[in-house]
Image (cartoon, rainbow, N blue to C red; front, top):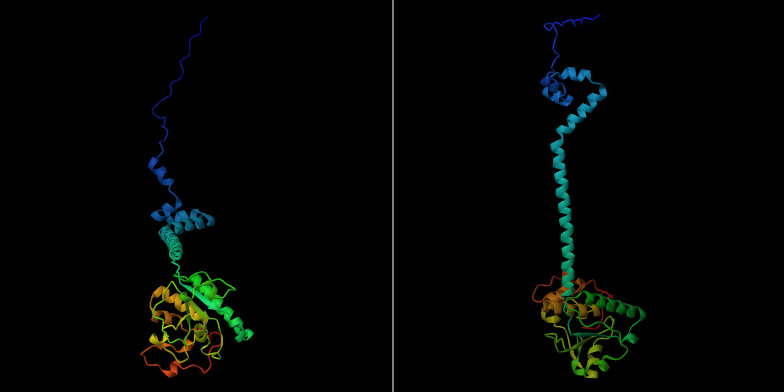
Length: 291
């Protein structure tokens, strides 16, 4: 007994619908970001209405961030420029410091010697001795800063005439009839270490004559008119000599150092007494019979 295969029923094809093909363009459009749809103006109200409050806030923030992009770029540029200027400024300062060091290395010491004669202690009260010590400290400090410093300052118990030949010694005193024209860097110049307030006039000149050594006064009267006696402090004489070694000009040296209280004006210029008159009392801190 055989079975006859039954034919499967035919499926009609006419009415079978084909699967829908998604609209690629429409899908792409539907994937647009909310901010793009908002900027495009399509469905603006619908887009905002369909969002929660948090989403709308986030969207506005994003929009503001986009709008401020150029501003942020400009700020970053300004910051870079500022950092660049700061780096350049530091570099310039560093170079300036190096230049100063180079200048300091180029200092040329002078062979000239300066001596402060400290043998007048018995003629001074303790207060004046202390003032002299301060003046000598000032000499030491100025010598370290000078472009042409004199030989190192040393404190010696021996008399200078025992250390240096007499023919190499020149005592600087304002009472000497000899006026110094040039500085001889082979010489040793002696400055009288005396704060005397004009009580011992001419004592350094007499000492030089008694010891048989050379003497001279700085050429102050050739360049400067003063309202007071030509007596300068130890440190002023010291600094004037340092200034001359640098400038090689007595006038410049004098006016770069002389204190205003001396009423100093260039020789030949009118001296207005109302401007340059002394107060009637010398500054006790700086008087000495050393020039």
